[in-house]
Image 1 (cartoon, helix red, strand yellow):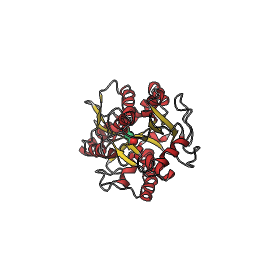
Image 2 (cartoon, helix red, strand yellow):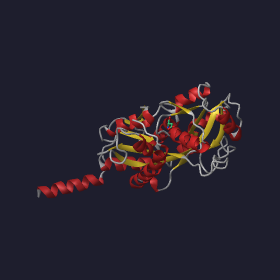
Image 3 (cartoon, helix red, strand yellow):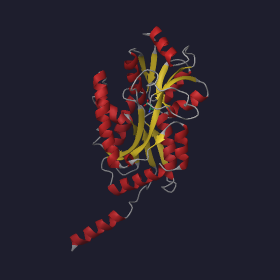
Image 4 (cartoon, helix red, strand yellow):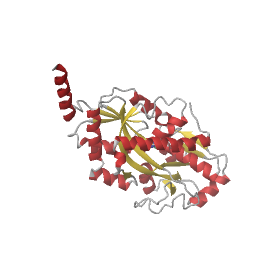
Amino acid sequence: MKKLIIALAATAMAGTAAAWPTKPVTIVVPFAAGGPTDKVARDFAEALRKPLGGATIVIENVGGAGGTLGAAKVAKATPDGHTLLLFHIGMSTTPTMYRKPGFDALNDFEYLGMINDVPMTLVGRSTLPANNYTELVKWLNDNKGKVNLANAGQGSASHLCGLMFQSSVKIDMTTVPYKGTAPAMTDLLGGQVDIMCDQTTNTTSQIEAGKIKAYAVSTTKRVMTPVLGKLPTLDESGLKGFNVSIWHGLYAPKGTPKPVLDQINAALKEALKDPEFMKRQEALGAVVVTDNRTTPAEHKKFVAAEIEKWGAVIKAAGQYAD
Ligand code: ASP
């Protein structure tokens, strides 16, 4: 009889929503404030609050080591749905790139769903003499050994894109790592570094204001926003097959109760349909995910495939960090 009551209680609980959130939810962004992932997270948090009845969502920036410090922090957080991680493609590059990333991408997290896909732009300081992609490659060749390429640390999107660009044009550059491309952008604006491959969510406003030079986009299709539509793709500029796009996803520490995960996933799906969020993402060149990768299982399958894909690229490039 006792067993039956417990079983009935469990069934009843499974049918009811868990009490979540019971306090502010923290979304850890593993990069500096003001950068591309931070911008996505803040817009997404705004959209996520609505299905949660205006719950408080706090963004915590834990930058450094290509996003691994922030991811490791969430992997060890209390699994109650009040600490989440918003990470990007680094979730799939750092497992190969770092000997000790501080977390296991596939086993230390509960997957909640994918959020968006963001193209990148190859940009330069405003004082660079090159005014288009052909002139840029000539300038890079003329200045071999002197070119500084900024990035957000080993395993970050800018690092990956910069790595692929260097090997495609066969020019080695001095890479300058930052805690995110927000501080890297500050130095690009100040002329301390020469070029950078960065997400359109961070470069659009600077390109529009004419504060940096833009040479190409990293996807095989042009990015048809008013600001980026005129830029060629790297593929059409001569780097056949060059294609990098930066996805973002949401994760909870392993062991977060299933009813809580279900509620977060339902809220995520609602947030991705938010017209304000969609409009803002579209204006910045980002594509909000509408396919089944918004489900935990499909997103996890996708990330596992990405780990294989980028792992092979990283191993071939011999790029490892401690
Ligand atoms: N996502 C990083 C940031 O927000 C940039 C990168 O990965 O390149 O700063």
